[in-house]
Image (cartoon, rainbow, N blue to C red):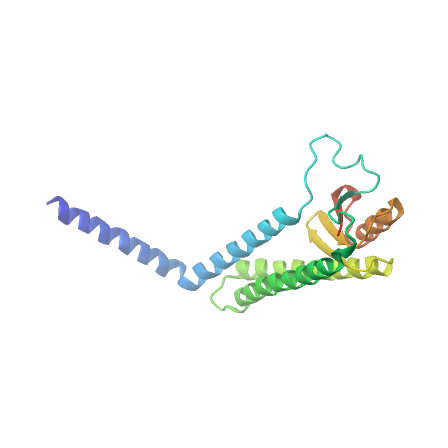
Length: 196
């Protein structure tokens, strides 16, 4: 007798899952999972490219004008590797954004998606477009200041700027910080400059 009741419970729970899927709709469930996946990708991007937090209580204000990292090591023969790095970074960034925009556009185009979900997708598309515009402006202006190459990555109230430079001078750091501030409003404490 225990076996039939167990089988009955399994059928009942299976029917509940089917009823839930029917009520929500498979398309809406797929769209919601896609939005969650994009959110996870944005979070992962933020975790990988956000500047390290300082625990000294100064929040980065103790440095003259932003955070500086260097991994060039003074190798004169590293220009090919640097060129490859900048090219690969730009291609990977564009590819990730294209995929995110494609998923968001599919949410907007889906007739079964709710208005709230469509509005969130449109807001995300607008945010990505604005970040693309700001990053392009920063990269153009920084290279106009004499840097050979530049990649800008924005994440909310932080910015990571990678420039091709042998040795950054305080005046150059100030120029980069000023450009980022003018384009984004991000203060120097939220800007990390990496020389490559």
